[in-house]
Image (spheres, helix red, strand yellow):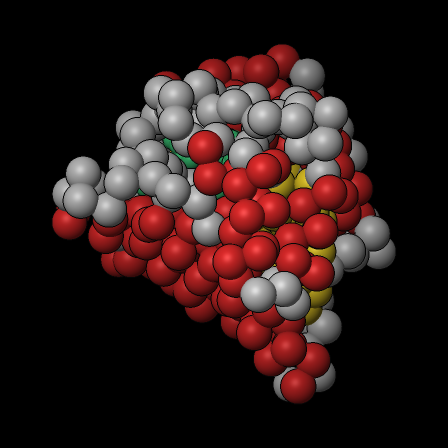
Length: 272
Ligand SMILES: NC(=O)c1ccc[n+]([C@@H]2O[C@H](COP(=O)([O-])OP(=O)(O)OC[C@H]3O[C@@H](n4cnc5c(N)ncnc54)[C@H](O)[C@@H]3O)[C@@H](O)[C@H]2O)c1
């Protein structure tokens, strides 16, 4: 079990949404939060909130779409804190446009933030974990990393990449007998504003999730060293659907309404 007390826990995208909530929850265990975000004002607000509760926090403004900026900021963190015990790659963006509506630049940025940053963050912080003999790398992917949806080609492809990254990293850690745990998180839509306007046809079956509940479950999954957190559990039913002929599986997904969830999307569209 990864105990969170006295650990250095780095969270990307900590200024908002579930990143911010996880910073609150994890700092309550006594961890030192190393909060990264591109949003300087949001980071300052988080710092004030945590310091008012006598929690430990350091903040770093960093655009994780830029590899060199990640490496430079990571060096500052390592100079000050020596090691990151738990790395939570949480920052993410969505454009919410169909393939021809999205610009080339927006598509590239989706992959830079949602997928490629996982590589640069891990490569920056893993060596110190190896030296210490322990570590934990958390990938916040999405249910969109297990199943595709209209108007999310770049997002889903980037999150499929994130799921594949986590799985291969986990197996590489096992193969190299390294004591570095991994957790991948695949939630359905969460009510943080990122995906504002999305609808679930059968809310009792696939509810839009409450940010507090998701943050609670992710923190528990980290503490238990769960390798996968899929929320809600009904998302797991996608796996057996994969065994069916594609037309039949698409038809069932159509009845559930997955492919229409983005019809009324008004969310962040690459803004944060
Ligand atoms: N909200 C949902 O419905 C949902 C569903 C499944 C998965 N997720 C995933 O959960 C994670 C958190 O989402 P959220 O709902 O809390 O979103 P959010 O928009 O509230 O928070 C994302 C944070 O990431 C930061 N960020 C964005 N681009 C950045 C960059 N280039 N560099 C540094 N920071 C950057 C933003 O400033 C923001 O603080 C994301 O990876 C998202 O893809 C969200």
